Image (cartoon, rainbow, N blue to C red; front, side, top):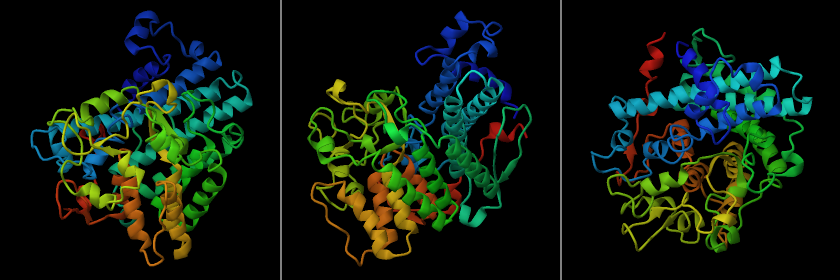
Length: 474
């Protein structure tokens, strides 16, 4: 990749302590003095390198905004985007040729591969300086690096790739296993998934003794609470296997995650979500298997989701009937009542409260957390893959039972696929997974805040073009 030199320079900034900026560091530690040997002379250097990858993932260009609460949900038609002057308008209409949208996609591509480069650099140095860490620590770092490499490649594939069920042999994306100056060729989606699953298998082996199994989600307030752990690796395997349409394997892995993960990542309670006034857990943080800490989360909320946000930028369902449709008018479902609220100070319609800051900040341990993999997805995967209808509905009912105080089971006659589609839309607002679900299922019409009768989709609309900056170097 021609950009590799730029990536290597950027990787130096990944190694800085969490509160240091790259500019400040470069002024203090000239590049010719801050050698690789110095960086990886102790565990702190490896820790900084790993944390640097997580920090880059939490940036606005990636999971701090675009790949969770904004761009992907705009594409999934979750918000009313009616004014043609809004920055989100070209995104909502899939105008992949619009200059601003092209820049956004180019930055996403480059930063995703920067994260991959960081994982490869970390793996290289863990092998090179293999006497610094204990074998147990080394396995913990390596396991996360392999998992991150798989996670990031998979998201590149499912965003830019074609429908796997019809185009698995079509050239999709490059898969980087090392930090190299050579251009890696594009490979078919089938080979990409082979590599993703290979990396996840390696991560699963290395994390076999992950402390998460005995210590749970670790100490309150610790920013490695939601690092890539063994249970998250198994959950990602289930997600990837379903994407590949290997339903028996996906079901087995989802059931494994439920069995070993539910005690470690318990359901959010009605009390924690609804009754904890001032520190309501609207993201259901206890259920998050993997996430990132987005330092700009509350700036994003104030600018884009607050009832007082500018009408030219606010992201909300507006006065459309989308919310009533999505939540089926069920005021008992606290995904509806806690995520969407009316506020007398501001616009006259419900706005998105999922990522509002806690009023009692010292009491809320999930501040800044953006969920990337959560336990409920495993129940949805199990429901989609389970051949027995009653058992499949049981998985859906389990999630529903933990989303309202007095649960009501689905009727035995309910259509499983229809109910799964409903659940994804209720559960994953602001997390990016709704778009990926629509794309994987290749829905020809999707519910929309912009079109009352839904938006007609074609296969081409689901596939953004590969950024020109990547194509130009090939």
